[in-house]
Amino acid sequence: MRMARNNKKKRPLWQKVIFGVLAIVLLWVIGVGAYAFSIYDHAKETVNDGMHEKVTSIDSKVVKQKVTNQESLNILLLGVDKRGGDRGRSDALMVLTLNPKNDEMQIVSIPRDTRTIISGKEFEDKINHAFVYGGADMSIATVEDMLDIELDYFVQINMEGLSDLVDVLGGITIDNELDWVDTGYYEQGFHYTEGEITLDGPQTMGYVRMRYQDPDGDFGRTERQRKVIEGIVNKGAKVASVNKINPVIDVLGNNMTTNMDFEDMKDLLLNYTNVRREVNSYMLQGSGTTINGVYYYVVPDEEIAKVHDMINDKNS
Image (cartoon, rainbow, N blue to C red; front, side):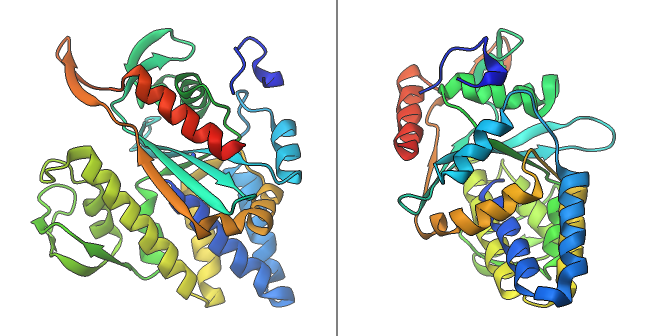
């Protein structure tokens, strides 16, 4: 039980994109040596002063000890749809479990409409509304309570910033399985042809936002998010020019928030990077229903217990 959450019961992060991009940035920064001291310094300042945010629901001392011991970690990844001056909603939620002992990573996706008790509010609502009520802290507490797990880090990215990131990298290439024309986000009505396609920033946003033309609904949307994640990581790994580093750091600094500090990120890169050798993905299984005129995704108790066990198994 966390020292910072003594009032809670004991407990037995979108999403891979953040870990992959951070790994790429840190590899660039560390690998270019003395030539890039100013870049290294810029990255450290951006992370510690511009991106770092403490949360009361996670005890940083406990987590740092786990990292030192190279124990398994649970990271909540939040893709936040934030526009204008509002706080935004977490359109994408994933629990990323890193197991350095077995060199494996597990990604559990939580549909944004999942009905659950909002921690601190004690009423049921869509899980993405936890971010509306109390930001990352309440999202962390709500996911912990729902799955009966402990989270060690959170990483939050403004989904609008994804467009800038893809453009900074010079576009990404993905294998698209569904032929369709965007009539919503991408105002030019971009045609996403079946097969290998290259996307710029706005085209990427249209690709991940589409829901209603996909017969698989949110499941299809999550799959497209994963394809974009892979595209970003693959493109980032091929971009070795140092003149790309600062622009990527600046984009992340303007659109990303995390309770990791720069030392945490370095430790994850040095000691946890091999977990990407084996990646397993899963989405909570449930069914859609309407309650009082509002659509919810209802996940049965036995499915919650199954996912709890899946995460705990990776933590052992």
